[in-house]
Structures are given as structure tokens and as C-alpha cells.
Length: 155
Image (cartoon, rainbow, N blue to C red; front, side, top):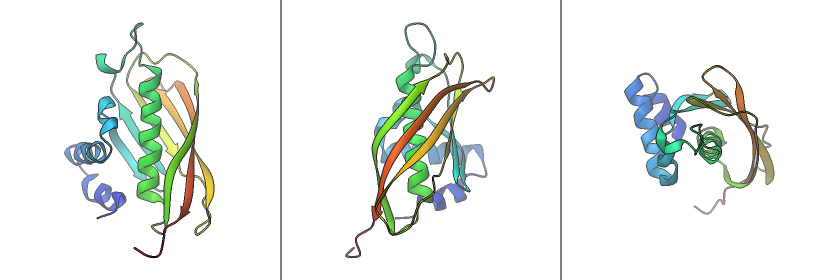
């Protein structure tokens, strides 16, 4: 199976390609389709994922729902790990801390940064994710703990 970063590098040059990559991610992890993420950037240790404000992701007061933003953080962090982590390592989310800083009255973008990883050693790594609204206001901060371990050599 091709690596996620290879698919991204082939598709990122056009809006249709970025849309297709986003749909492929949702096909692999169907739960994320509920927020319709759109990948904007992936590579060089970062990822940016956009989520449009629409009725399906709003709460009773008309702002973007907190859990929809948590899902956005998780899809950003997980896809970044899948795409950028050394191929000899595997990952699984172990936990998440999240702070809701402000109401999101418009579409949002999550920005995740790849943590420092020591190849070949089992470890916890915390992926930091920030979510910004269309005005550049930070509305969410998340830390997603990923358990990283070496892949088995008997594949």
C-alpha cells in the first residue's frame, strides 16, 4: 500500500486532488467523514486541515461544536503520523487533552506539528494541535498522546 505522503505529493497540486486525498482519508477512517475535513498542507513536520462551518457541525447556539473540533484535531494528528512517521515505526492514539478557548463562529483550520521522535524506541509523543477560526483567533488547543513503537520485523 502506498504511503499517505506519497498520495498527498501526487494529489496536492490541485484543489480536486486535495479534495480526493481528504476523501481517501475518510474512506480509510470513516468516522472522520462526519466533519468533511479538507487537507490544505501536509509535509515538513506539519499538517493543516480545514473544516467548513455547516449545520452538521454546529451546536445549539450556532457555533462550531467542540467535539467536531476535537475530531478535526484527531484527523490532523493521525494523518500526520501516518504520513510522516518513519516507516519502521507504528502509532496509535493513547489520549487527548483539549482546551476550548473561544467560540468558533466560522469555518476553522487545524494546524498540527510533528513531535520529536526517537526512531526504533517505544515512546509516547504528544502531537500539539491548534485550531484557528477565519479571523486567525485560536479557538482550540489540543495535545494528542500517540504511543509509538517499532514495527515487528516479521511482516
